[in-house]
Image (cartoon, rainbow, N blue to C red; front, top):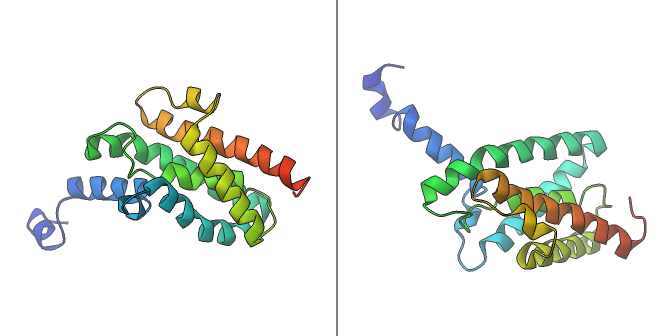
Length: 165
C-alpha cells in the first residue's frame, strides 16, 4: 500500500496494532463495560463455550489453546496501552479461564451457571495457589492466574457435579 493511501484507509499499520491488541485484550470492547468488567468478560465467554463445545474435545482444546495464545500475545502490550498493570478492561484472560473451567462439561444452563459462579469466586478472591500465579507485572502473570482459577474451577466443578465429563 502506498503511503498516500494509508491516511485514506484508516491510518498506518502502526496504529492498527494497538487497536488489534486492545480489541483482543478487551474481548471486542466488553472489558470497557462499566462496573464489573471481569464479570462481563466471563459472561461474554458463555456463548463461545457453547459454540466451541460443538467442535468436540479436540476442537475445543485446540480453540482454547489458540485463545490462550491470543491472551498471552495481547495482555502485556494492552497493559502498556491502557497505562496500568492488569488493567480491569483486559478480560481475554477471564474468557480463557471460564473456557477451562467449563471444558468437557455437558451443555446445560445449570453447568454454565455453576461454572460461572465458581470461576468468578476464584478469580475475585484469588486463594492460594491462584494468587501466586498472578505475581508480577507481565502479560504472562495477567493470564496465568486466570488459567489457574480455570483449572481449579474445573476440579471443583468435577467434585460438585460428580464425574460429569
